[in-house]
Image (cartoon, rainbow over all chains, first blue to last red; front, side, top):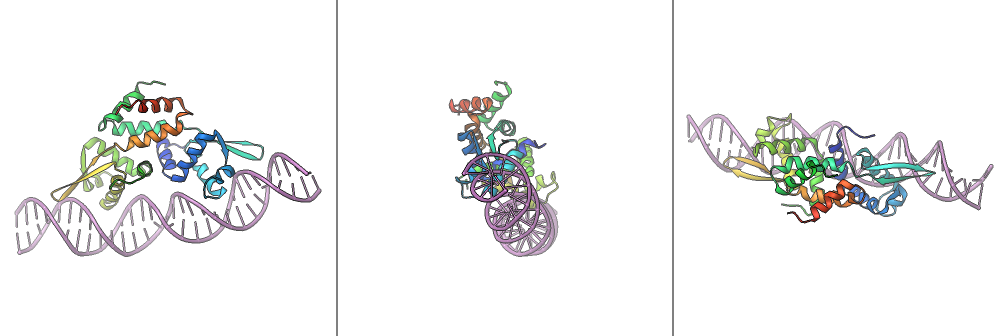
Length: 109
Length: 109
DNA sequence: TACATTCGCAACCATACGGTTGCACCTTAA
DNA sequence: TTAAGGTGCAACCGTATGGTTGCGAATGTA
């Protein structure tokens, strides 16, 4: 379920280093299960599952059950909202961010 | 003092809604003191000061003492690092982020 | 059927964190 | 010199959060 405060949820999700590591793994492997990811980090499967839950809460990941395993996939679209927020507040102070803001505003997608 | 893990510090700083509000205020007022900002939020001056401290820890704000007051100014440059991280991990999955990544990689700084 | 995987839920624990109050220190103005 | 405004530091408190263990339920395999 997508939260109301997308930007807040995204920043909150990305604030944890383990979660950022998980995102890094998911960026390479297309899809993974909690048990698979637990083999890569010094965390229990349950710990991984919790992190994946908050990532899903932020809309950064999609769960799909297939048989007896649930596979997670990265869905980084909500990041653009967070980026847009940063470009907005920082745009008038930083040239690079202003360039970014106008770039996003130009709607080149 | 600028932290080693810039990206982590930035996400951590932006994860708190009150801190995002503070950044919003600083984006409009150029510079402000903790007591001034305390008048805008339902927080004590000390609470504001703490938040400003973590913002400074992330390099998002600059402190400058002038007489008996210390004024804070927004320095959003570190946000570009955070944006770059998102564009990198999300680039291969999201066209908008990929466009952003290549935009940043084109070296417009 | 029986057994092994894989998962989700719940309880639990320690620590980090947001927020407050209290107070001492420095700077400006009377 | 006294008083007031503005800060910073430290102690303190409650809750949120990262992390664990334990266990029952569902799915796949021998």
